[in-house]
Length: 389
Ligand SMILES: Cc1ncc(COP(=O)(O)O)c(C=O)c1O
Image 1 (cartoon, protein in one colour):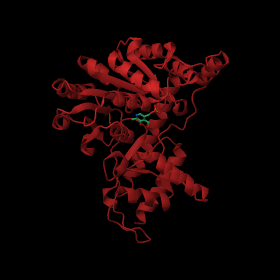
Image 2: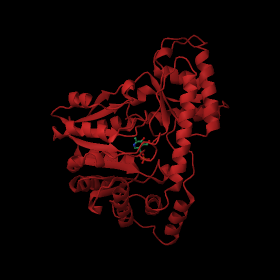
Image 3: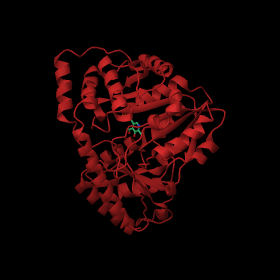
Image 4: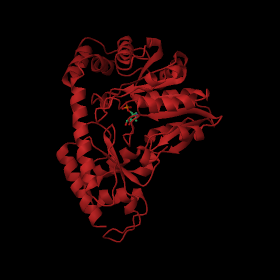
C-alpha cells in the first residue's frame, strides 16, 4: 500500500516549512472554512446530553433517518433506513462496499483522472483496477463508448465520481442516462456513484444524482456521500451510503469488524448538517466558484499550462504537457508531472499533487480550498517558476 499522494505532498510541504521555507500548500483536499456553528453546538449538546455511547454499527437511527430525509428532499429517492449505512467518512463506505463484494480477479472500472484511493482500495481487496482514461476534450467525462469498451465478464463495479476529484467533471441527466443504457446491458456491473461533491457545482448547473437519472438500475446502484466537503466537516469523519439492503448488510458486517459505527457525537452533528439550515453550504459554494474563476483566469495568462473550467468540486487539474522536457535553472530536465510538482514545490514554493497520483498525466492538481489571497499569491509563484524554465 502507498500512502495517499496528497498527504505525501503535504508532508513534504510541512518538512520544507519546518526548515524555514515559505511554502503555500495547495495539496490538501479539505475546505478551509470552519464547520458552521449550529452543527458544532448540536454536537456539543449531544455530548453533554450523554450521547457518548456506541451507536449501532450501521449508524444511529437519527442519522440514518436524516440520510433518508436528505435523499428524498434532494434527489427524490425514497430509501428505507435499512438501505442506509453511516461510516467513518465516505472513504470507509467505499472500502466497505469493495471489501464486501470484490473477489480476487474481479475488475473495477475507474475513470481517470480518479480519486487515488479508488485504485488502492480496489487492489487492497484483491480486485483489478481497470483504468479508463477520460479526455480533457470531453471535460474528463466518461463517455458511453469508453464504458462499453471497458466492460468485460469480470467487471464488478463502475466507480463514478461526480463532480469529480481531481478534474471537477460533472454530468447532465442525459449524460448519466446514456451511461445507464450501456450498464443496463451488463447486469454483472454495479455502480458506485460517489457524490460527495454534489453541493459544489458551478455556473448555475443543477446536480443530478445517478440514482435520480437511472432509477431502473436502483437494485445495483450504491450512492456514496458524506458531510466532509459540503459542510466543512472533514475531521468529524462521517460518510454514508444508500443502496440495496443486501449490499448494505454486507457492508455493515465489514464495518462491524473494522471500526463499529462512527463517533456518536459526530453523527449528532451530521444530523444537524443534513437537516438544519443549508445556508452556509451555498456560501461555501459561491466562494469555491469565485476561486475557480480566479484560477482559470490566472492559468490562462501562463503560456504552457492548460485548464478547462472545472464544473464543480474544489480542485483544478492543470495540464502541463508543454513543460515536459524543459530544463530547470539548475539543469534538471522535467521528465514527467512528478518532476514538475517537485520543481514547483522546491523552487516555486507551491505544493501541488502530480497527475500521476490520479492516473492521468501530464497534469498537476491544485486544491482551491484556500483563501483568494493565498491562491493569487500561489499563481504568481507558479507563473514565475514556469517562466524560469
Ligand atoms: C471523491 C472523494 N470521495 C471520497 C472522499 C473521502 O471523503 P471522507 O472525508 O468522507 O472520507 C474524498 C476525499 O477527498 C473524495 O475526494
